[in-house]
Image (cartoon, rainbow over all chains, first blue to last red; front, side, top):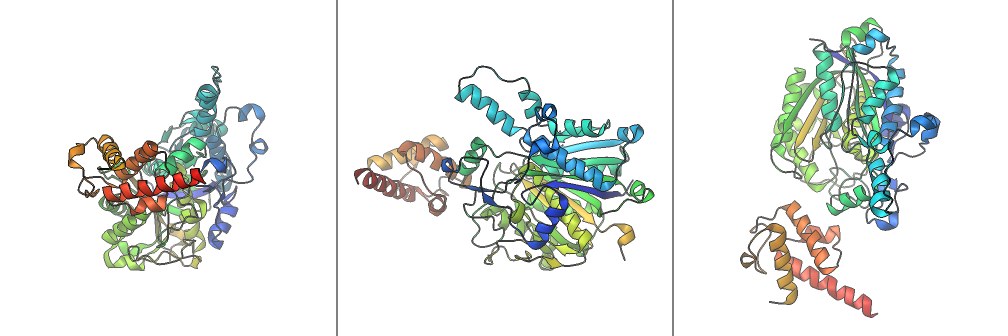
Length: 407
Length: 85
């Protein structure tokens, strides 16, 4: 069995187009939530979102290629390029066959889907463009990443709503751990700011009109986000042999299904995934110092997640620092687990806990340490990253300070 | 039974696939086995039935049929006032 190292990160989100912007914003507690610019606000009662700003696709892609890329694939490619460069990966023909690409997405090419079918249903134009299918398919981002780098190993897309990236990273992790591949590009991508999607979220009455305030008593719900994060996983052996910079060791993954409700989260299901992840990593509860929470900012998620953490950690729950970075980068659905694992890896690497911002008052039902509003310096041993999706599909990942840098 | 009460009960019976005879003004959502997401579906149907819009904050306060009937009456009265002015 191989140990697995995280050696490269790429990230595009409401907190900027690259990892340095992302980390700088997380450490400074900057909120990426703003009035929506991609949608007609007058048609919406929820008028805020965590959009990617200042992104000009034509800077990144030739026109002919761009015609084949939905926004979610554009994000994945930009993040993948950054991650590969960051890791200093050189993928020759042999290495490329031993590399996997496993990405998560909740809904795939939603923007393409929305535009194409508005022309058909709304405008009565009977002609649908031949690029629609290749752009909208949920696996297209994964395919584009393989083509970009000539990667010829196992490649596929995982979809489990808000846990998509978490489940995708877990699959990539197991492949590297068990020697099926030496390297994996993994993470998630989402771009679902369409009027239809936003209206549908509105009607579920889980969206905040003001901002995202996870675990705060006055929280009003989640705020939709978008973006992509890609992580480079390698066997620790390979990473050390080539002298790669190691952000952290990906030490374990745990998954569970609530088998309960399509919408309501479940404390036991979440707790089982957390327990499975910690057991898989071979760690004790005392070794976990930080949890990057699912922390959507809805009334029910934040209470349920707090109870799940208490259920697993018992009295130790009060010693664990917990934060929801969704308060800054929004809820990027199928990309969120990747953005948050990147945030946790950077937290381990820099020894700084990103805060839960917009936190204004304690909630008696959410009574743990949520690192309110201000980042906190702390040398970490190990961190969890929680993803709990609609439909009760849970994925929890465990990062650990890499061996050689451990005391 | 007022017209509004009758329509509210009919919409809830249809949405939840339950017998309208078992729903009274005094029924709570809990008694009718209406969970929070069922409640959101019910409100969506109520909004369509009466051409009204229930705010998220108001929606959170609803616990039973009487709350829904009172809320609908209030919103319809407000709508009428706006139309007349």
